Length: 101
Image (cartoon, rainbow, N blue to C red; front, side):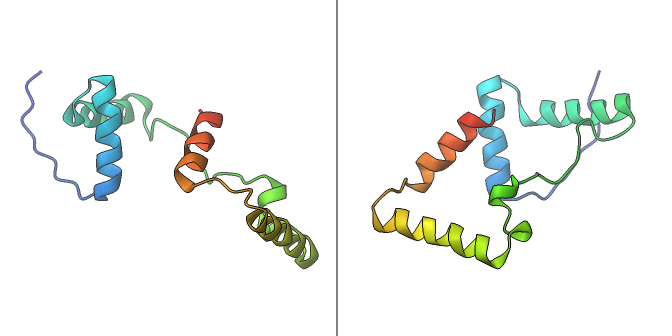
């Protein structure tokens, strides 16, 4: 089918780059991925994936902690830093992504 419409979209440069990196690994051009997304909206009659806020485990959710629980958790973190029990951000995020595939 011939493509005859142009679509201009403003997105965050970092989001675009991250998406391009993934799409490149899949061998899918950005235009094809956008076309696929729009087709899925048409086929499903809506957004083709679930939309929800991520759920933080209660043990990590400061909104559900008492002041004493939050203070205790922060003290544990401070002790870990003082003991040198830390991981650089890049490694931590890589580990997180690996665990949550």
